[in-house]
Length: 378
Image 1 (tube, rainbow, N blue to C red):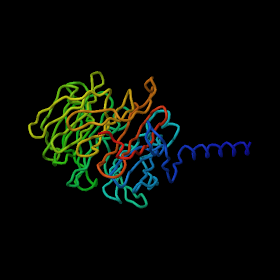
Image 2 (cartoon, rainbow, N blue to C red):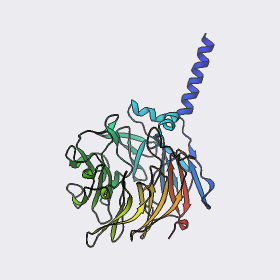
Image 3 (cartoon, one colour):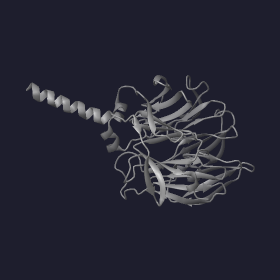
């Protein structure tokens, strides 16, 4: 009896070790994709890119690649004991498709803000010492996922913002939170009345010092807003239609563009002219866009999702063209988020490479692909 019990316990320990374990290093591997040479780092979720350091996650482990090197594990986040701990298990992440367990914003090389398990964690490196500084109002079953990928932004004055994302129906107030002291304290900067919007998709700190937000989901809940006072009040650029349903903004010197997130209508690239305030609806897109980043002064990368996992290039004149594609199943996932191509927060205008992150494709639950910047069309 005792040997059998000991053997069963050993098997259980080995299973838990395999489920929870994350590697110390994730190496780049040479691949070819659509006729182009590339490198891939398997299993990782792309977080932030500043041209020199690329941050990523795998479960609750945090990785960094410096100057094009391999990804090395630098810390692990510890969410509160409870349902969020299911994210430690490899098999549950695969079964339910939830690879985006954390969202990360580096304050500098030694301090990170990490959103995980319904809390904001302030982490110090090396060593990974962490403190919880704020509890998210809308996180967990019956509440929400906390925030979307581009619901997190840092402004030039050092302020950090996040946008609340409610996933369940119901009348809840939803707002923008702001920290002026590197995540130590948080204040509610702006709040929609219950029922006015379902949730806030994105908050964007623009180069001119303004703050942009996009909301959804029904026509009357879709707002595109611009704030000149750090999110305390907003001028509504557009509202009341799927044209104003945005998950991400990209700012150029003379325009701000957003690709739409219209579930049941044609999606487009939409632009706002800085000089005149005119809004134009431009190129058509084949599906919704959850992710985008500025590639240079003329081009933006778009990460399309739901029925496709594609990368498009949008130009500041409103035109757009398809670039990369990863095959997805013809049958939508029964559980969890849809496929898509995730892109990094931060500044993707520098560095020799561009990083793209297909999620839930037929080949990859998550993987970071690296392409030469010179491969970008246009």
